[in-house]
Amino acid sequence: MIIDTHAHYDDKAFDEDRAELLQSMQGAGVGRIVNIGSSLGACKQTIQLMEKYDFVYGALGIHPTDSGELTESDIEWIKDNCTLDKCVAVGEIGLDYYWDEPDRAIQKKWFVCQLELAREVKLPVVIHSRDAAQDTVEIMKAEHAQDIGGVVHCYSYSKELAKTFLDMGFYFGIGGVVTFNNGRKLKEVVEYLPMDRIVLETDSPYLAPVPYRGKRNDSRKLTHVVEQIATIKGLTPEEIIQTTTQNAYNLYPKLK
Image 1 (cartoon, one colour):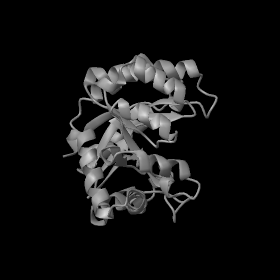
Image 2: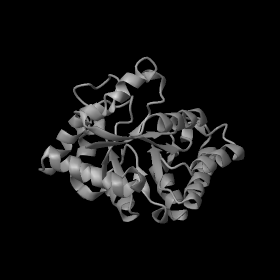
Image 3: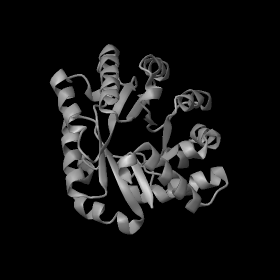
């Protein structure tokens, strides 16, 4: 059974066939999906998906690029809904310096705030970090993120920096990029990482693996990620699925 630890089935890319697609998942070997909040609206839709599908779980949080209009009352709403039985994490949260907006100071403020929220509700975090390695690590260390736990989503940094996140006890979300011809850096990271720290993710509808690169992604395509990791690690696809599923259970015990 494959577990997709990071997807966005609330995205408008799925509006025409969402129900049909999700109903096909378990027949395709996908046993659990964690839908990840990014905006307040996405969090509300995530809750709806959690309620409708028994195999869909959720994380609630505000993506850094959506943090510009965030308010304290929004944070309170997230906090209240983190008590839902199928809410497994706070996320995705972090820093994204690829875009100029919102201001970096605003991103940092709400990153810290949501780390504190996760500590309070005793849930792990889903970290989004793009072109912001130094500030991400500094904030995580200052906020003792090792005591919160979680996963670095769509890891895109070096093998050397991976050790820093490993030392904090974090997991690494590995998805379609590992199959790309220009994904050499991530392949090196996967080779370096211990198997007990890797979880599978799609970031659907984004980052579809080869041979679907550039098309809409969905959780059924994780078999291609599994095959690539198996090649890198010198293991069988079955071993990759078994280990990453157990890792997902360890990261998110509510999935069991």
